[in-house]
Every structure is written in C-alpha cells, then in structure tokens.
Amino acid sequence: MMHLRRSRLMGVTLLVVLLAGYVGAPVFPLEEQVEVAQHPAPGGMPGELGQYIGSDGASLAYVSYTQTSADTALLYLHGIESHAGWFALAANALRNQGFDVYCLDRRGSGLNRENRGLLSGHADDYITLLADIHAFIMPLRERYDQVFLVGLSWGGKLAMAYGLAYPEDIDGLVLITPGLRAEVDVSFLNKLKIVFLSPIYPTARVPTPIQPEMFTTTPVYLDYIRQDPLRLTSATVRFFWQTHRLGKYIERHIGGNRHPIQLFLAGRDTIIDNDGVLQLLKRAYGPGLDVLTYEDQTHSIQLDAPQRLVDDMTDWLRHHSESR
Image (tube, rainbow, N blue to C red):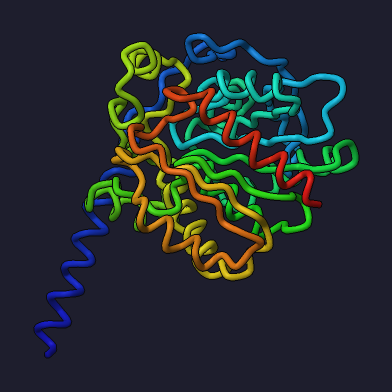
C-alpha cells in the first residue's frame, strides 16, 4: 500500500514538473497581431461599429445592423473561433425583415483584442462574459418591446447560460448548432495542461480542436475562414477551464429555463453532438423547444444557408411576438 501511494505521489510530482516546463513559454504560439477591422463574410456588409462599457469598465466594440422602426432586438453571440463578421449575411437579412441586430464580439475575440488591451482568446471568468452581455442588454430593454439572444456554436453555450443566469433580461433563445455538447475536444495532454496550468499560468495557450472544413465545405466560405485574420486558432488554458465551468453551470441549472427556444441543428455537423444537445435541452422545462434540422448542412448554416435560416427565424420570432 505504501509503495502504491509513493508511486502515485511520484507520478503526480512528475506531471507537475513536466507541465511546469511550459511556464517559461506559451504552450501554443500567440495569435498573430493583426490590424483590427470589420471582416464580414463574402457577400456580407459591414455593420455600424459601436462601443460600450463592459462589466469591469473595459471598452468593448460591437457591430449593429439597425433601422428606425424595429421593436425587437436580436443580440448575436459568436463561436469560439469566429466573430461578428461570420454572421454578416444573416444579420443584414434579419434587418431587412424588420429586426435590429447587435453582434457582440466576445472579449479576446474579433474587434476586442490587444487593440483594446485584451488578450486574444482569454477569459478570466465566465461570469465576466455573462456580465458583459448584461451590461449591453440593459439599455436595450428600455428601447425595445422584446429582446432575443441568438447564440451560434460556442456562443450558443454562452447564450443558454445567460438565459439561466439573467432570466428577466430576454424573451427567448435562438440556438444555432450550439456547443452545448460537442463531438470535438482538445487532446488528453491539452486537457492536463488546462487543468494544471489554469491556476498557475492562466495565459498559456492550447490550439482549438476545430479544422476549417468542419465549419463549411463551400469553397468561397472555406477560403474566407482559412484566410480570416480575426479567426482564433488558439485560446488560453483559463478560457478552456472557464468553458468547462460554463458547461457545468448549464448542467446544474438547465431545469430552471423559462424561455422558448428555437434550435437549429445541421445533419452533417462533426463539431456538435446533436443527440447530446437534444437530450440536454429536453430538460429545459420552458415554454417550448422548436427544433429544425438542416440535414444537408455541416455546421455554419449562417454562411451556407443564410436566407433559409433567416426565414425560419423570422417565422418563429414573429409567432412569439404575436403570442405575447
């Protein structure tokens, strides 16, 4: 027994020593420093650039697609690697349907990086990310009759958590191929780095586990993603640990959901575990779960089928506006 305990202790010590070797340098190369400007997907239009004060006083940029007479606001949250530009096609089409669309770039992503004193791909705490959304939404509640969160991929996880943490702030959720349960994951070694380095070297980096072909197979959008200067291909170990904590928060509180949910899934998605997402959301005892599966799509349906997506969203949003 003593020999077994001594072996385990030696194993843990060796692991800590090996991981500590990464403290002197990043685990994965830092994102290249790039000129930060809007980078909408091909065919998409740049939106109006604005800024707001985040939960900790940070100045954060956002992109909006608005008009003069909308009474419903849609707040879009992007995925782990992306930014507002990946939703430009859908955002403009939704504006044409009579909605005001606000696209928030998460701190550490898109327009909110080193140019604003924020480390690319980093988040100290998921609570800060939720509080940033809250800071943005509060003025919208005074201006609009209804506010809906639209979350895509990783942003779908953040949107779901927000609906649980701040139920009075929104009127419903639109989740597009949401990262509530995933097929892809970081390697076992990177999981160890995340667990052990997050407390002692939170800004160490690991690569994201997604390849461009997992988002889309449409050549023009595949080239756009591959060449996108704002795309994140790595994130900090603290960010990944907070992603884990965010998922645990949702697991604990999903039964308290109060909101109607429109869920979009892609039949050929290799990033998201569709069955797992459905199982989780069936525990979300809210006013209803409406599921649409685009069997012929991969993951980024906002790029490959934007008008179809917008038409289906518009029908659902108008139905819930009229049923109030």
